[in-house]
Image (cartoon, rainbow, N blue to C red):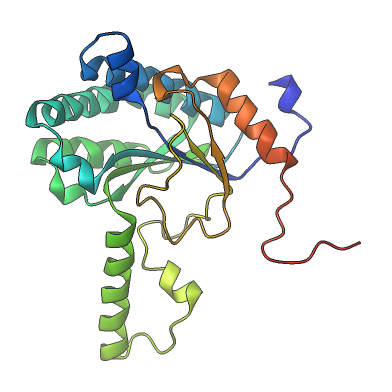
Length: 239
């Protein structure tokens, strides 16, 4: 961590955790093995983010579109999510990590919903790191949901003016700053319907490393690259 001490770090990192299935396929293993090892990467990156005092981390864990995957794989993914919630709660409490969900939690079985809400409630007052996990998430659905809520508020008079600040209040990321850095593993060059509104000026970093192999050293490489970026937000750099 000492070699990152004097560089500019982001306040909010978002990660598209891609490549679990390919990692398993390369080793002639069932896809679920990739997800299990990927869970170890989650722990490593969450712990590293907390140790670096980066305030926000958002992980894309399960998209709305992922429900179309084979039923057996979805069943195992739900089991892994349940295990994660049970195993990682002690670490969250020890490290002061607040657990938060963005997405449509109602898509999940009631048992999973209860576990998620329980972990969110128990970690609510933790101040060290806000860990947002995107579950059954769709950027387009999020924007549509916000638009519908604003339209309703405009009709009933509770909203008088519509601007970017007002719109952001109705997103699932309400109160969370936009990501400074978006990392995508596995080398795919697409956003995959993730945080479409929020990443308007986010720095993008793509690595060929598959998610189960993405650990602290690879994370450091991404953060070093971010520190070298010149973020002008559309402004002209002064001479």
